[in-house]
Length: 109
Image (cartoon, rainbow, N blue to C red; front, side):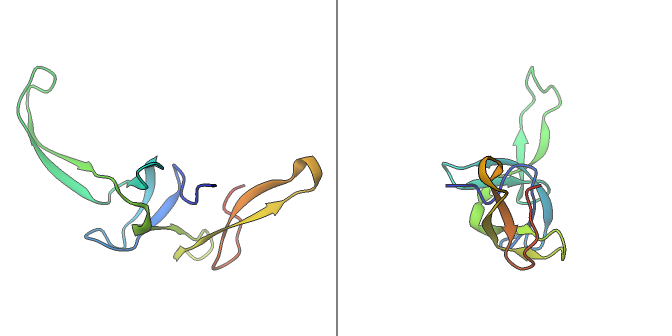
């Protein structure tokens, strides 16, 4: 099955404490159905000083969130949109591309 959300896509968070946040997808975990979005679902972790990190302290990192909580950002309107697929080209040049359902704009170039 083709991926609807890929690395480096710009997405909108639909629910949770980061609702409305727009960010770039940093990493995708297809087997776990999770994504890491830049600036969303930020968690704090208290880290003890160690040889690798002599200062320790409170570290803030983005945690993975379920892929159903994010939607691709429509390139033309800037709003969240669903993703569909369409075939473009003829013969050997034919390929499958992602399309924004709301506006019909092609996402993959």
